[in-house]
Length: 81
Image (spheres, rainbow, N blue to C red):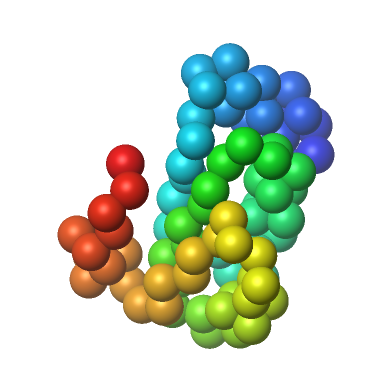
């Protein structure tokens, strides 16, 4: 993931000036931990939180919002682009 993130994902997010991202299926939050290195983005997580308590893990990080559930049930409720 580090190579892919450093060479492809992070430059893409910065070059296209993304301000918000959504990850569907975060498991234990490994990708989110990397994405948090980009200070300019807000991150929405959609996950049933079966592998880890993502709400607890990211509590207090204002740039992260955790939606616990299935993407088909939650996507329509997210207001950000």
